[in-house]
Image 1 (tube, helix red, strand yellow):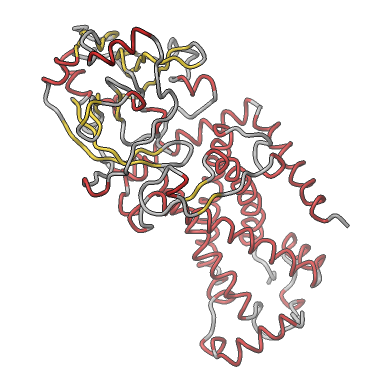
Image 2 (cartoon, chains in turn yellow, green):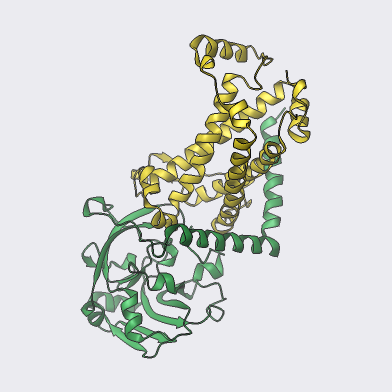
Length: 224
Length: 246
């Protein structure tokens, strides 16, 4: 059996592309109105809880300010992002990936075990026996898969006036349209923070092996 | 080394590639497909006729921001504004059995609807206002839409870069019970910045669809002959999506 199932590998790379396109086109959209508010409404500086900096062309799609084109990229890749996540979730429920690799065991939550895991990470010791992922990995992947990624989709839908009419409860769940927009930004930056940490940890611990395995699938008995 | 500038260089190369892809016809086709898919999904999950959320007086924003055109500095408009628009007419033309020319008095004598709704700008901000006016459906009934009418085009008195503003919608939105020809905001006659004397309220779509300073409503079978065929001022000039519900 492969270390990473085909469904996991396909989704991993499609999702990376989607997240980058969505993030960079999102920065262009942010430039159209770089202020964030809480509640249903907000339009003036004194109502904002955050003045967002203006993002430079090299960080945005397209590479110059164009709200219409940025929205085109954003609403196109929203479909790629959401449908590929849905397919990955169904596949991972069926092939046992979530149950086997992501779900935590009761013993892993013991403070002593968590503390030992944190100390091992700080000492950059990533070798561990037994399960594929250690507790911190499971927790990070769990938060990304079941909190941050769904939050991006649901807050994105809550911002849309068409969806706001179709599913008004969705906007209410987030505390209003401007709150949903703020949470959309916070979750997006949280995902970028995860991405940077994820890449950094791969780079300091067998980067070529991890990269090869996420492409070819690798072999289960190679798992350290 | 300058790791940050290397990262910025990779991002810049990526965005340059995306910018090029974005200019191809294939990409335009994909984007139009995605827009249609979103619109279809909104109609599908919302059932027959979803209503935009309505609020209470307590939810009103302290001001209602004006955007796009916020003043019409011509003598003719300013004289009408000062006099309360006695000579303003809303023309109803195109594929209708009975073309109309409606004064403000006439529009105010029709059955009125008042609704407190949230206005969502494509830029990202929102404001909440109370709108009063006749339903567009009432006016279209009076004019008797012909069978071949598919879209309603809105003509405006304001000009941007020398071109009068225009917008359009399908009959699903035109006949929607919350789609109004509004003449009051928060109980007062519409202010100049919000489109005096008449503006469209099309509550399930973004702000640029809510045409202001309305002078005419035109029923058409196709948007091909309107402007450059995109269905609206910003659709034709900046490439905004015609379906403003996303």
